[in-house]
Length: 97
Length: 232
Image (cartoon, rainbow over all chains, first blue to last red):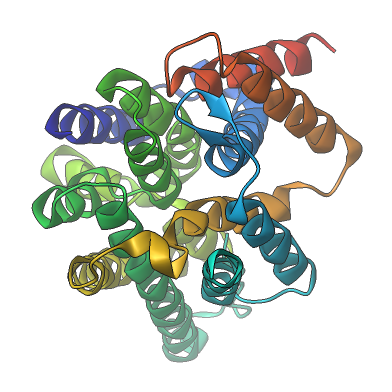
């Protein structure tokens, strides 16, 4: 756990520091900009399905799927961040009862 | 992530009003992020990290999406390397924020180290929404400072709260991280291309789950989706 915490922290700090330090042209080319725009989308969408539909190395559909549906509806209705999270948790907990 | 455009006037005598507007944005964003910090603290404890590890992440890593991803992968049984790698990839956008901010801030030495730590979505959003360089600098330091303080406070309270529960899954806390990711993702899904990338990434991630170690599908899916996206 500590290895992940410290390694992740160091890597993220170095990226922030590099952005303030490197010459502009390194990060300003079109391909880098494109990767920067697509990376969060690819990572976040993969994280959503992995953390909803897997347990260990198995694919499952359980109460978390209900939570995800509720979260999507809440986001479509422009609910604030914390409301989205709380509603998803509540839906998941209710489905487990 | 949080929309907080302020600051209209550019004349020197409008500075007191501009300054007040920038501070309102900074504190508003800080309070909202503090509430988000509560959920991070709770989710991290639910994922099996200690209170100390949870608070260390908010102090040292200090980038919300990366922190959620890191604890999510550890909580799902993933290894330290894939958890850290996912967090770092997700944090790579901060390098681009730094690039946009560097000429405005003009920081060197220790001040650059301090500034780097608070280069995040929120401080960049408020800073780049300002018209004058002076307001942009205040927007950066004010928002970064407020978010740092309240995010860490929120994390600590959330961790204590979740630590007091016997079994966090009873409250559906394992659904909190995906919900948080949906909220983070939504503002980016305005055209067809992000939807295509998201579909490919989630499809590849699920398909690779039985075949690769825990935590790796996310990285693998991101690489495939990016290669496709760049080649198009």
